[in-house]
Image (cartoon, rainbow, N blue to C red; front, side, top):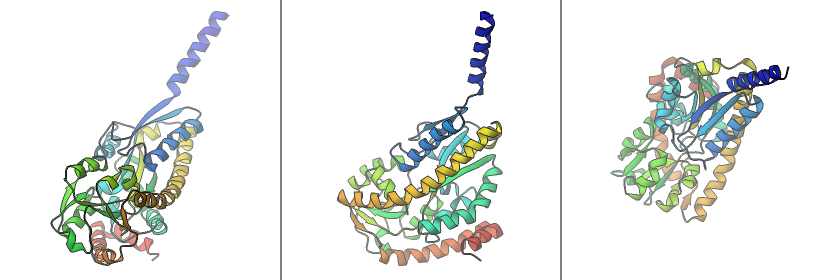
Length: 321
């Protein structure tokens, strides 16, 4: 009898070990970013909600894959899940770049409307690539950082402007700057060696990457709010049992709501911190906004032409047409 009990216990332990699923989830961002902190809480909540049946291991700092490799890694089943910035893949499909059209959505309320208007097309586009969208969270508005004062866009001519997606490359070219592709994790080193003079990024990135040590001017042009997406390989998702899938989706919805709330809250905190570190903050930068708006209108028209009827439907839905 005792031998049978020991055998049954060993079998149960083996079944439990087999039942637990472990997913690796790479991110290109640092552990100190609110995006990764939200991601880690999501992973912890999934483990709890699934009763330990699904364990997600977050790999920040581009430690498992470089930021621009993560989407492909999920698509090709190298990892089960991942986090990446959508606009980095705008060359694959226009919908990935809709949130980086300058001055289309420049506040959290507008960004949420654009997210809702584009979500069905985004989900379908990812699904066609074997990827399931779990949630999105925006970065704070993208504003201009510069090593030197900028009074007009002409001051950017001939400078080296960091680019991280097709939209930022296009903006750099439009203002006469040279686009230099640099991932966020590499930006401090590029600034230290003089490899870049200015760039568009969020207040969050300014604090997290200690950009005040290299650049002293911040112009709050609030060009757009780029979104990070957290996704899962569809086959990996389908392999979960229904209670675990439900737990995952429930916690993804919670992570999305939390992430949007924290992003907006942190924006104000980050700006105050940058000012306290000696950065000269122009919170509205109206003179630059007026010039950039012309570029934005042209880029919106270009995007609609490229995206076709589906893209026009997204913009119409965003505008409530």
